[in-house]
Image 1 (cartoon, helix red, strand yellow):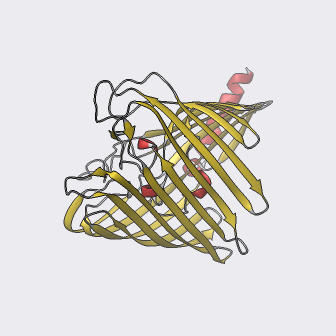
Image 2 (cartoon, rainbow, N blue to C red):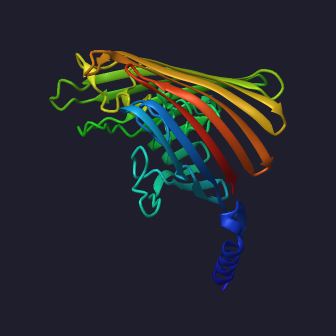
Length: 353
């Protein structure tokens, strides 16, 4: 009978909740269910010699004389969190599953499909499931309208893992899969240590991957090492400075698309130098701007044009909170590759559940 009453109460809340607003539901003693996420609508215009994308990544196609405007809601997401005592389970989805620069066909409807972002369980010091890689420096990512900010210079990976955390120390075994399709047998090993204080926080992380090239001499074989240093430093008032530097041989972990296949030379993944920097300034309590920059260089990766990988992204925005849950924003920026570049303009509206 108690289960029936609980289910009835839950259904009543869901039905009455406007647009799945952020609610925490007390199911029973020590049992809670929280529904959250946000709606985000983007207007985006791209002008230049790089093809239109809904957001920039580490590899963007050339298309001369591009001038294209699109509307989309693909960044919108929803999540469910279940809490029982000290056990937390999280599921989250967005609408980027079509994995195309502009999503599915929009001739009749913008019918974008769901993509699983997070699915993990956390208890005490342990976390198991799919979530952000331990190698990924979340605190250094700029507050940007272009989804994820300067992807070109960032570590950006979500994958299944087993992670142990003890104060500032995090140790993890993570999915070793590669885009090359070659089977891998040894998990990726990641360690990170974070220092926190009144001034902000900084962290260092190391990644070790043991790969088998399956007989393909263009792929990596043996142990590959990479590292990053990242942080967020408080400056004046509510302002902050964010930064990250990635070095070594991370392959698919850094700059999505730049070396997604873990291509290598003499058995070693191409060495990278990737950076991001961002400054957030509050003009007033509810009006702020972010200036951010990211770049990557892969000297050994030579394209069909004979040039090595050298790409950069810069953006500047103005964001206004019109109420505690709603933000309006405008952003301008430029993305440049070895052979072409495009300017972009975005206008966005975001409502947090």
